[in-house]
Structure formats: C-alpha cells, structure tokens
Image (spheres, rainbow, N blue to C red):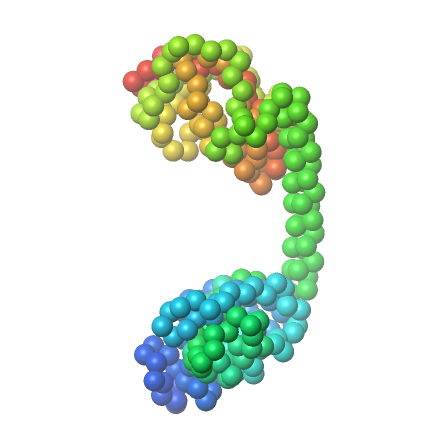
Length: 287
C-alpha cells in the first residue's frame, strides 16, 4: 500500500497524542496530517530537486501568506528538521498540513517575517510537493521547456505578422480569437442548438493550407454541442450571420494547443487562419 512509505514516520508520531483532531503530534508543538497521496514513482530523496507550494494560515483559517519554492536543489535548510523529515518521507503530488507554534514550524525561515501577524503564535502550514525530480529528469524537463519557449516565440512572431498583414488589432479580439468580416448580410445569427453548414479553407500561420472543405464536404455541426469544433472557431461562427464570409485568426491556445493536432498535420503552438462562409442555419445538422 502507498501509505507504507509513511510508516516509519507514522510509527514515530503515533505514540504521541494530538490536541488537533485528525492530526498526529510530530515534534513538540508541531502536529501533522497527510491530506493527499501523490506519485510513488517520484519519491523525495536527499538528491531530489523539489518544487513546493506553501500556504500559511492562522488556525481560524485566515490566510497569512503564500509562497512557491521553485526547484530547490538539494537544499532544504530553510525548513526545520521535523519538516525536512516529512518531506523526505513524501512523493511528488503529496499534500500535507502541519500545525504548531510559528517558531517550531520555522515560519520566519520560510516566509517574509514582515507578513507575519503580530501576537499570533500558532499557525497551519500547508505544503504541496509539485515536483520531485532527479538530476536527469530535471535536465530533460529544462530541455523540453526551452523547446516550448522557442515554439511560443515563433508563434508570437508569426501571429504578429499575420495580424499586421490582415490589419487586425486588439479591437478585433474576442474570447481569444481575431475576427474580420469579409461580407455582410442581414441573415440570422446562429444560436445554441441550431445546425449550421459552413465551408472554409484553413491555414497555419506560416501560410500552409491545411484543409479545404470546398474540395470535399461542407462542415455541418450543432451550435453549442461540445467537442465538435475548435473553441476559437465556435467563437467566430457565433459572430457571423447566414451567408456571410469572414476570416478567423485563432492563436494556438484556442486551436490545437501545445501538442498540435492528433493527426500531426498541425504542429504544436500553431496559430490557425480560417476563411469561412456560413452557408446555412437550420434546426438541425441536415442539409
């Protein structure tokens, strides 16, 4: 059982009663409660590189401070020994709460002393272990993060070029996508539950053609039904009237995201351009 990795720690504290329901005394005034178990495949060791989210509350639930430790490299000296022992019995994803006197929780070592309220002696300290990495895992992760930053910068540059070419500004931005009307009609606007028929050509921001429904079958779908079209596409269709044509420019966050399309045709972090005609609005999806 996963709880067995806490057994040595629990054996130490289980002989000590606690004044706090649900907690076990850990050391002196410090009491411990395990709130959630994480991933046993990423256990903390003396060699681990850790990231932690810490929250300090007064015992009445008033939030005092929040602090994130980002990739502490083999250095837990800012924590008292009792807390270090808890961390070394933990895994990535574990969350726990400790309650006790501020001096024994080491709150002045962990948080800026200036945020600590005067005349408050007892606190609750919540800790979530968001990362527990080996050196090799850290190197791999850093390489992936550098690649993602490069792709994000590339997308931003290509998106800026497209917006400039199409003379789109922040005024044309709605719910994360850019919209430019090419023709106008007095037709109806689609509403939730309507079936629509549309044709489009789609491109990635580099200009590569991805899809052309005019060469095959028109798109038909029901407005408001989830997981049928990209979020940015749905936002664009909602702004059109029957018979109109428009251009959608959709950043990757509202298109295929950081992974790209499942087919692999659209790369990660690709903004999309759609030239769309809303042909028909009806009560269902049929032509």
